[in-house]
Length: 195
Image 1 (cartoon, helix red, strand yellow):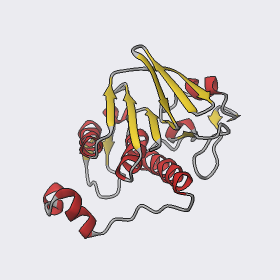
Image 2 (tube, helix red, strand yellow):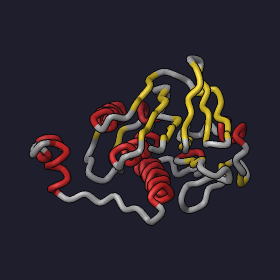
Image 3 (cartoon, rainbow, N blue to C red):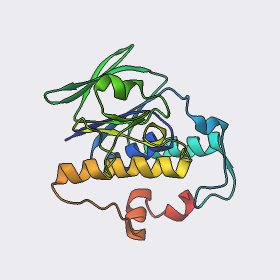
Image 4 (spheres, rainbow, N blue to C red):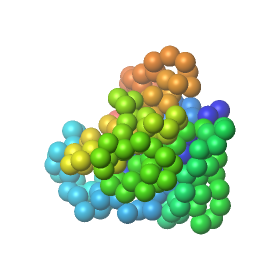
């Protein structure tokens, strides 16, 4: 089974983790808890009338945790290296190998630069799938957008990255589309209570 490593635990990183894990890819998230969501109050996110960013973040964390994402809180990634088999992510506690890496570190583009990703001026250059010039490495959110840092845009970038990883793994375009029966199966008939 493919292993996806996500660096960053904001809207983009947690969205990528959710889509990857719930669709059968083992996913690890390294989250330093330095996301700008802690400073935000969301009025511009569909389905949310008004919510504090930290509360929204906790909801996202609970959701990815419920799907079994291996979420490591507080462990900072110091390097990401391309290998013959994928990527090695280095932290202060060790090295972790993955088939894919999703960089979701906000406006901090240091890891992308060190990995050798191409840039377009100050932004990480990605294609429409959010893949960088390094095959199997994806960049999201503020890394690839000059001023479009809204949570909903970042979450969409993370979802796009994960769906394109899933498409690569399955060898065809993959669509994540759930119906009420899927929710009942996952949440044991309590889907309406969970929302």
